[in-house]
Image (cartoon, rainbow, N blue to C red):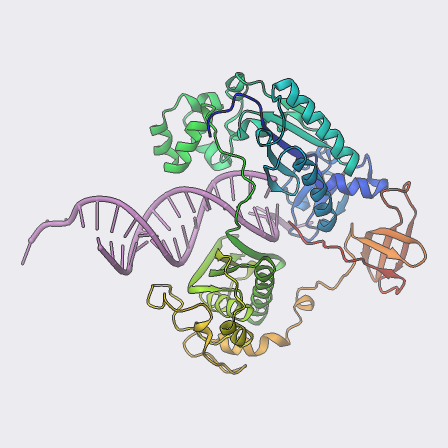
Amino acid sequence: MTARTDPSVLHLDLDAFFAAVEQRDKPSLRGRPVIVGGLGPRGVVSTASYEARDFGVRSAMPMSEARSRCPNAAFLAGRFGAYRAVSRTVMEQLHTLSPLVEPLSLDEAFVDLAAGEHDDLSATAVRGIGERLRSNIHAATSVTASVGAATSKTLAKIASEKAKPDGLVVIEPGTELDVLHPMSVRVLPGVGPATADRVARLGIKTVGDLATMSEHELVDLLGEAHGRSLSRLARGYDDRPVSSERASKSISVEDTFDHDITEPALLTALVNRMASKVAERLAASGHSGRTVTLKARLHDFTTLSRSVTLPGPTDAAREISRLAVQLLDEIDTSSGIRLLGVGVSGLSDWVQHDLLSSVDTDDAGRSDDVSGNGEAGEREPGEHVAGERRPGVGEPGVGGSGERGARERDIDIDAALHRQHPWVPGMDVVHTQYGPGWVWGSGLGRVTVRFETADTPPGPVRTFAADDPDLAAPDNSTTSE
DNA sequence: TCTGGGGTCCTAGGACCC
DNA sequence: TCTGGGGTCCTAGGACCC
């Protein structure tokens, strides 16, 4: 792709997105600080409303710090079903501008206007397109969007950042370096705290400073790929295309526990459950993968990973579980585990459910060759699960995991983790008499609900017994992103 | 009661191959 | 019979992004 002369790359970013959806749906929270994130002792802030940002609350801040900075905020778990629905509507709006839309997350996307049917993409015309888009999005969703447009992705994104909140900035072609060079190196994609520190030691603070360094110097300092790309970005060269189809490379599940876990049987049960979730998501997306990875974070926050690659792809829960548990055995968990994760990578679209594998996937046997060293490379996927294993029989050579396997089913994971409270602050509920509302708080066998919706005025608060049969939770995921 | 969850990309070293 | 030089695959870890 040749360099653009029109500001035809558009970047859209929804303002304080999760918090904005909460304020939309919970009228009593409009104009008040709202913080969405993990509510447990180890949670972090996902999104803070602008009212909460006034108190210094930021994304990724530990929730404990957010609570002390802004004790009067509403602290809510996410409602990802609602966020996904709003996101879908927004993405549909973007598709009216161009078929070439690249979503970056639920609340962010690039659009290549040059791939759409616009005969004028001058800065003035693009401003009009952007303002109409912002207005349509607000009309359709009641949340506000900031829009940037420029001749490249980097500049478009910088423009939308400048536009926040609820604004529009188009960077005029020809003025890119005037905008870019005075800014902190941190605005460049790929420059985080570590890279910023390294260049700061050479006195490099701004993008303009960075542009005075040669590519060779940057490669020496930051490595081949990073140095080369930063050298280009600092000079305003960014011809990365907007790309709508990006195949996923891995699927993973992880969980940080409220308290460190040492009990081996519980760790094993957790790994098994996570492996099943990963397998479900693999199947749902029509993928299978060759590499299974176990991730563990220790009490001191050191993070370890162990992985193994199969000769062929799998999406079988039993297979993924077995390998993940084997990998867990390689890690010293005795001093306590704060996070566990299971992932599968090396994905292919290959459809797993042929005759061979469907017979065996319910009771996968041992595979003696999981090294991926090529010896078994010609075997068909599924063939390596031909072995039989009776439940509860110990597995020779993998120290103890057989015994674990026999007992893990006895463990009530949620009870062991003290996760028995069904009412999570922020979640939607409906009462047979009072109608729809949301959980304000819960504990001591009670739950407090505020009865209001996006279309009502601020509503009344009532408290019920936690097991009140008149109170129900519609299917609404509070799972995190 | 410092530090989430789901991702992507890169690097470095060793094995292996030609 | 002094030790080349790519490539590719795999593993582990780290930086970064939203």
